[in-house]
Amino acid sequence: MDAAAVNEVLESNLQAVQTSIRAACDRAGRDPSAVKLVAVTKYAEPEWVAALSRVHRVFGESRPQQLAARVAEFDPQIEWHLIGQLQRNKVRLVLPLAHTIHSVESWRLLDRIDLIAGDLRLRPRVLIEVNVSGESAKSGFAPAELLSDIARLSQYENVNVTGLMTMAPAADHAEQSRPVFRQLAELRDQLRERTSCELDELSMGMSGDFEVAIEEGATIVRVGSRLFDGLNYRA
Ligand SMILES: *Cc1c(COP(=O)(O)O)cnc(C)c1O
Image (cartoon, rainbow, N blue to C red; front, side, top):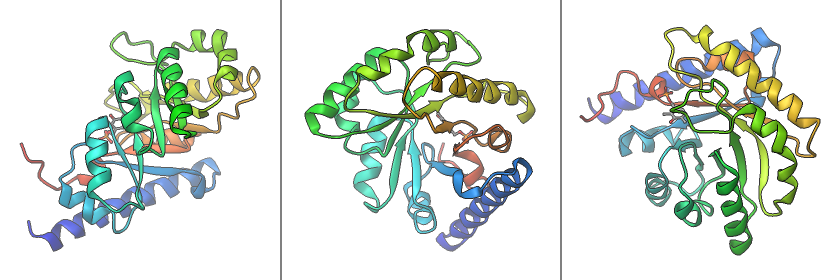
């Protein structure tokens, strides 16, 4: 496939996703400008990222090292989100690069982010990852644990906790994710009564279920494979 054909596929995929986002917003009576699309590039070839970056500005990577490589390689105007696991020894690498860290899964990690942020004089935006479904293989706070310990948020001086993030279990149908997304939104409402943090952001929904997530209140959707449909991944 030549570069022009790749561009065409990417632009048409992006348009299709944006159209679906608007349709989901219509159904939910929401303003489409209140939903941010994070284009997840973890499996994308550099040429695809380059092409997409001409028409889209918000990208996500799941690995700190790859995030750093992408930031160095592409237009500095791009807004990069870290959506995958962050080890404590990678915090210093990631903080200056990431617009938002979606995957804060423990108080220990948040302690570390707060410490390094103070050191670097940064005020990173972070989302607290919640394991709504309770799958043992999944990282994130248990909802009950978060509810009981949420007062701890007030001890962090250098981080801006802007909301919650979750991943629904793998499913064949988007509707199966709906209860998970609804529970995250309900948890956010409960947490708001116990903290002064606004927790405005709900990062939920991926290629298979982002429309449902938007109907349930997502303000950030993380979409990867749908954007790259029709392109051949290098094996
Ligand atoms: C890979 C990934 C996505 C995007 O998944 P797709 O199904 O390809 O859209 C979203 N969120 C996280 C945390 C991911 O790791």
